[in-house]
Length: 354
Image (cartoon, rainbow, N blue to C red):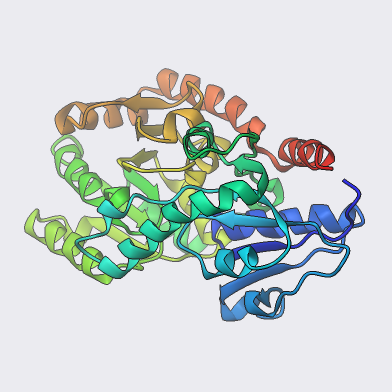
């Protein structure tokens, strides 16, 4: 690629967000390769205000042909870029189907609908569509994108080599067996189904606890989940951790007994590879991007039979031989998603652009 200026754009950016983490890593790669590269966004978390520029201030120089745009929602950033004489390297993180949130946040549902519609206008201006999973690549191809490839979400190993936080770890050890799910509290993640699973699993292990780690960005849904837990007598056995630091997140993964996902829409599912890397067995609903991310590892299921799944959770925790086999295969799979491997893919794709 002859161009030596390549900036990235995303609608929002925040600490600990998977898209944001990928954007910052790519910025490092570009700068180390000699590019001038910044990140632009519309919604910028205060903690990142010195690291990210407001998207509306961007105007390309005469030397710029391409921009890198991360797409996951209806975006004013895309609107701005489409008015400028640039072409796109699109990184597609998937758009959550609006039907999942229509009942709890109609405004968000409209923004998601717009995000899906924007793919149609982005397509002719995109020279390379990079999807974070095979599932997402299929969506791009269905939308008419011709030149596509996969650039997965990845892990920076140094971010997972921190020591456990003693106070948090001690509190969690008192709540075993501990089931874990990580992800924003949202209807497509189906946290209510995890609460139902906890209800059935506590028939086997009355001390069991479920930890839900993730930002509580839809208050109506969060309140409904808490009401459900209360009605099932589970309020004292449910941890809502909201947003946590990286050190806290690693402590949750290392302390939990099993990672369980009931999510019905995942473009990729970064917590799946975090679990695999950190040696936590995964039990996940086999839908959308999940099978592609797991790659034949972990334990996937196609029917939400809670009694059967509760027995499976118990096996994953107590059958040491089974648990060890699953962990070994998962950790081998996780090696594919480490930063050096994904960086090589990125460099290869970039070299193919004129």
